[in-house]
Image (cartoon, rainbow, N blue to C red):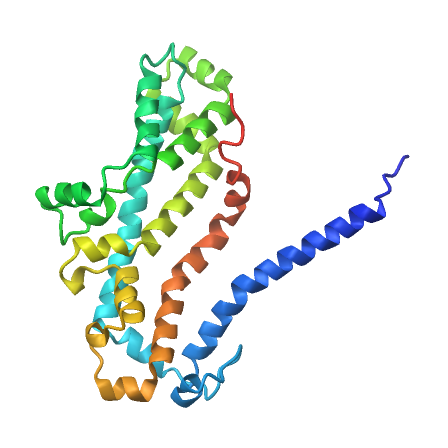
Length: 295
């Protein structure tokens, strides 16, 4: 039996790739470990900037004050609600649209017109001021709907789903279902969705990350801090240095150190995505090639 002998250059190439991937992983992980170490460190060590990858003068005070901060907890719940509502609405809309647009021109008259309508929105945007005026006139400001409805449809993600449906769902299955008397809803629910789990998981992850990290829309659509999502709340604390929204007195902040409180909040904000990703990672690896093939 012939055994393929790997050349020296190929082995060097593989080793180099592993080295680059390991280095990239460290560059992503080490800052997070440092943030975690600072959040568990004492005020003096954090202020003196002597904390590396291990806590100095271990303490949980920063987390106690963060979790006990009413505004922070409310912002966290707002973000969780936004992610659940935003992802559900976006995926429901995009999956239904992708199913229709994945049909042939013969089955769906005018498909190309609708397709170009979505492509046009990728190239030209209405602008911040017109979008704000629409949201305001609809009475959505200071409500969760101002955060989830304007971004309900991502044209890029929609096109990825369309291409996945057109290239990965066997037409023979759909034809067999039609012969058996299945309607479009049955075909969509029983054939397209089960086959498209990797695509759905990947696009859902993209959508969740978008909603979780988005802060600018919360800044312009929310006038009351009680309605801020977590990313907007952290932006006011960390970037604008506005500690009035923390509901923590100046003496407590002095004893805790701003760095430890900020680090604790940053880590708590990153934790949900770190928890979710391992569950969808196996689908993400397959779904990352969405739209790579064309019919």
